[in-house]
Amino acid sequence: MFKKTWKQIKILIILIIILVCLPHSILPHRTDNTGNYDLESYKKLNESERRLIEFKDDDEAMKLKIIQLDIINNSRKRSNASPVNLDILASRVANKICREAAVNEYLGHWNMAGEEPYLRYAFAGGYDHVSENAYGEWSSDKYYKSSQVISSMMKTGHGKFMAERAPDDGHKENIIDKSHNFVGIGYYLEGKQFRYYEEFIDRYLKFENIPGEVKVGEPCNITIKTDGNSFLYFITIYRENWPQPLTPAQISKKGSYRDYTNEEYKDMTAWDLSKYRNGTIYKIPLTFSEEGLYYIQIFSDKKEITKPASLNTKGKTPESGIVLKVKR
Image (cartoon, rainbow, N blue to C red; front, side):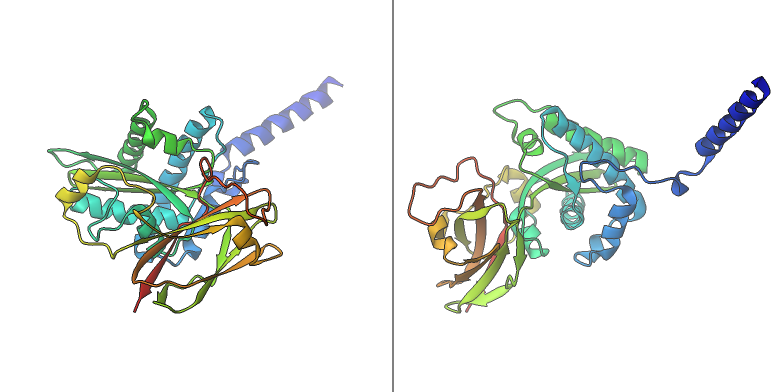
């Protein structure tokens, strides 16, 4: 009896040793029930994304961003906010602004073409709502460039955001906003400059047939698909002139940005929008009377409203960041 039992124990010990010594690459990848992808899944998404390909992350950068994603989600967890997934396109948008900001030695939410975050994300092909955090460091001596240094500096940048106190805690509030479900992570370290940007995304709608450019007075349509559990509640369309170039000094002085413009072009109410619904799909007709950029914010609600009523978007999350170019 003892010999048999001892033999079974030895077999068990050998199996444990084999499992411990096996390379991680042949063990199952760790996943959880939050909907987060594992590293291999993110790498596949990175390979399949063709937009902003010149700002694509290599495998080492993807590993660093997965580590940083855990840090971001731990911050959100402490505030009872659900975890966010890493967004590949938003990460490339972040990489692009990080590189430009570091090379030209500025820090801000505009690029040198004069584009705010929602314009930069839209021009890259994004249709969802984006909210940006920006962090930078610089030194009189060159930084030592390594994965460990980059990871540490990203962690420091995020920690600075989380250390903010009201009323000057906009970056922290952005991180723990419960409406976000994706984030883009970007960094750039070269010479004496380091930049780190977080691009939080609100993605709840699907979009089809969004024109990149339309002519003044020419009818067009945008197609919006809901998840079947919500209905379009309100649409606000803002107009702005074409962006004007900015110098690094001008950008650094501008501070925070607004998620809208001073010129509100058009509002569409829930009962107006209900007329364009077919099942879960809305086909919204639009016409623009003047040249410029038109920023479209869409809000939804669990209840469909088909008759005039009191509406209020306060506290509601914009679920789109569509930008249309209108020319003559």
